Amino acid sequence: MDNDLLVEIKDLRLNFRTFDGISKVLNRVNLKIWRGDILGLVGETGCGKTMTALSIARLIPCPPGEIVGGEVFFEGEDVLRKTDEEMRLLRAQKLAMIFQDPTTSLNPVFTIGDQMIDIIGSRTDTSKASRLSMLGVLSNLVPAIRALRREARERALEMLERVGIGDASERIDDYPHQFSGGMRQRVLIATALSGTPSLLIADEPTTALDVSIQAQILRLIEELVEELNLSVLLITHNLGVVARTCQRVAVMYAGVVVESGSAIDVFKNPKHPYTVGLMRAIPTFDTKRGEIKGIPGSVPNLLNPPPGCRFHPRCEHAMPRCAEEPPPAPREIRPAHEVSCFLYS
Ligand SMILES: Nc1ncnc2c1ncn2[C@@H]1O[C@H](COP(=O)(O)OP(=O)(O)OP(=O)(O)O)[C@@H](O)[C@H]1O
Ligand code: SF4
Ligand SMILES: [Mg+2]
Image (cartoon, rainbow, N blue to C red; front, side):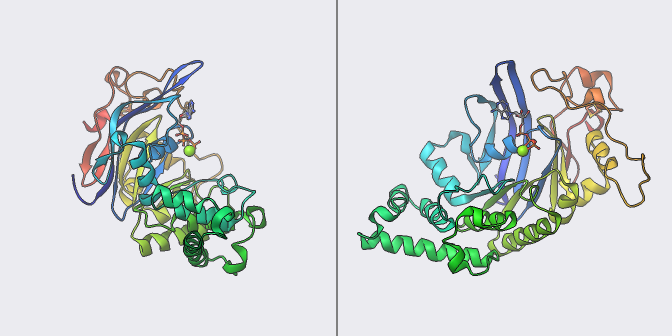
């Protein structure tokens, strides 16, 4: 495997068992994240962006989920074959994750400092983590534990200062409700990046924030990515965020990655009919009222997805074979620009 390839998802298929039947949520997902990449993952709600990201950390709830095919490589090793303890260490040491709503990612009954110290402790081995999580119970009695907690607290303070929390030495003992939404997201970024991760998974990190705070958080992520030499999987609905932040973009539709490539290529020269439709739907300053062209139809029900290409009922280029057989695996139509569609097979 190419050493510059950090993550490779190959033909991943995921089903969910529901009371109404089997929902075929991911259907041969293929995705590559290179070292140093900021890859934007876009697509309509429910198309499988979060499930794709969670598969890298093997955090898909199984059951009701079931991975029915494919492989997920992280640094060349298939995470689907690792033991639970190997996965715990991989998540703790190599992966950092931040989510849309910073409120629900923080426990309201513990101070920011205690939560950060616990997480920083868990990045080492299990025994050290459990010693750290005994919190105040033993820490006053055993000097070694006190020293471990002091070390973790210093790292937490350093990171809080780095992400722009003023008076960090006082704020570290505050509770989450004493922080604004933007500050909570900064705290989560500080926590996520307090180890030495190789990959940051940011699942709609700015959707819950107002536009000016959004811009600050994105700038902070960009700076940290550069400083810490990280790769990033940035999930968003906002194509403007992708254009501004990402070098590469992957477009998903109904559980399939239909197109991927450099953000400039895909934005300026989209090839898959779904991507073309997405781009057409972006309003510009010149767009007149009533002129925005959405994609006709609606996303399919994954309990009973259309046969063949899942986009065919909405595609203006659909041919008879599109309803009969799945489109070919992604094909490179220009260097590093891949499309999965019969038009390019
Ligand atoms: N526990 C579950 N049981 C059944 N179906 C699920 C479960 N979790 C997710 N799904 C389904 O998996 C599909 C993909 O979900 P996912 O959260 O990955 O979408 P998404 O692209 O991240 O959407 P959004 O943009 O709204 O966050 C959806 O159709 C969703 O309904
Ligand atoms: S495979 Fe066929 S239906 Fe699907 S996007 Fe391409 S042309 Fe349209
Ligand atoms: Mg999601």
